[in-house]
Length: 103
Image (cartoon, rainbow, N blue to C red; front, side, top):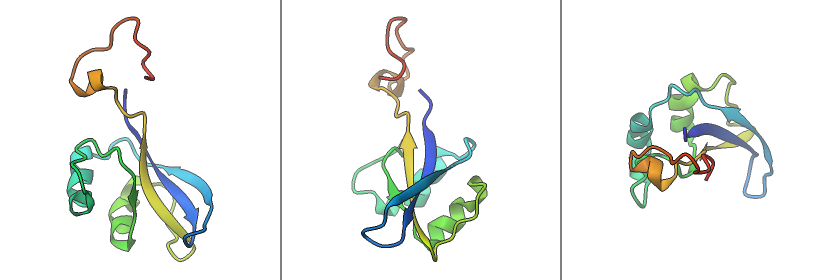
């Protein structure tokens, strides 16, 4: 399964509500993301499937991969991933014919 990345858009502040999501270009590299967020990882996340709060520096770095302009004065942003690969896919094994591809 392919990992899809999105930017969650939240109202500012700790009690802010989720207002939507912005798609991230599929051309973004997991290796590049790993390097960008390595200092923030408490455990290794080589596939970059955890969620990460985006500070102003991270927003600038990610802006080329998102069509909409970020507005950090009004919103908070979180990088997230969907379609996390199954253990079989992570091991590089093809899915069995009867295996649910969305497992």
